Image 1: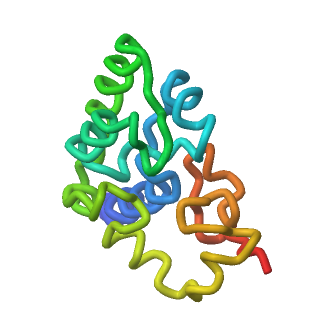
Image 2: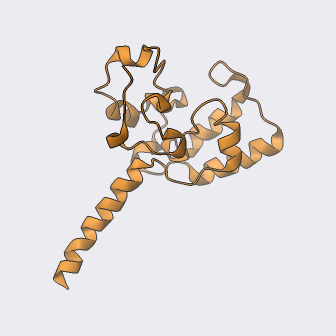
Length: 151
């Protein structure tokens, strides 16, 4: 019995570690995948707090230099879904500057060993291009063991 009790905390930590590999592990809404994933990786909703997602939705006509406007019904659906699946963990509670995931404390900490020139290389282009190094980013898989930085 004592061995089982000792194993339980280890299992809990292991499950949290696995969940971290699939940041914000909520299954992606088909609408979110279609509308947002058509231009960039459909970022896991757990990477930003609800307030950040709402600001992003409120400014879709000027979405980081693009007009990403949506009809009212789609906007409402995405707003509801993002609010329900937004980040609630400590790493996601503080909105990053300009609500950019790539400017969050968490993102910068996870990528601090990446040379600045890597972000501007032709194969990567910017920190927002997750799939350049994380081949399964569109599935929410950011496992460090599967990172391949293009040369």
